[in-house]
Length: 361
Image 1 (tube, rainbow, N blue to C red):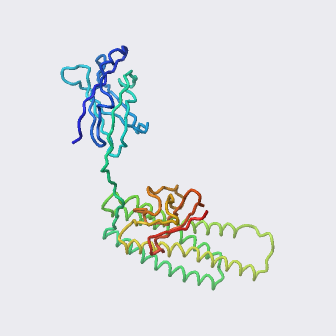
Image 2: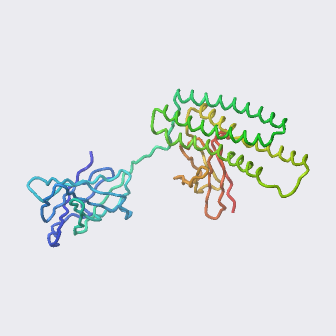
Image 3: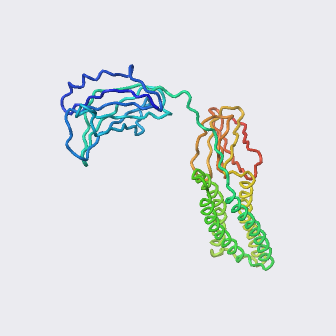
């Protein structure tokens, strides 16, 4: 139960002299973070309307309001027809310091008016024992394991078929058809991936799994989309008019080499995503902890996925980034007087959950 403190805020719509009865101040009004401040608003006249309300807002010790509004009843306290009880729950994470009344507003229907009030402040005592969890384990349940195992096996078979198809197209010299076949295969995999993600989420037993699941499958989708773009560029280049005439044999050799390189590029995300399924199956989790170290220590650490904005880790090096969804991450190290270092970390191919850099001046 929070400590209940009573304070009197006298509001005058016209005459300001009534405010002189407010005697409480920040020195003798204190409330601990996480507890409730009870106070009373006294209006200079009653409000005769069924759809009216009172709004009070406060600014924190940092000068921000963060939407800190008290809850006020429109039912007056006993024996006082214009006195209305209000309460404000101070967040458990609030910093210690003086909070200040920002304003009081009365609403009647669609109209509102700000009322004059004598300045009022109170002191918040920070919670010294506030402890946040440092990590969260998002486990994969049995049904989800079966789904991922099925998809890993299917991808393994698909990779074997693709390799066989590539060899067949190479022997036939049908390199342009190979590009079309590769593009079709990638498009089909993107559709299958979307269906797998939807089924995976449906099998989840906790909604807390959703963000990590979305990050995981989004990363797999990015792998496919990158090579899909390559196949489409190759098709466009194939249809472009030729400026120089080439010898037929040389032209065929160049196209064959380009097609083989494209095939290798397309196979990579298939193999990467199969590996991703197996890693999540082996660990039984959708997240991992990554230790970030720098020489010298004390560097600010930020992390981001491809296409995302960087997020800063609360602690500088040497420290641990907790509960990263399984995906390819970029880790950025910044320290005054040293160059910014940016490293890619692939949790599917890196067995050690450690990334370390030596900072350069």
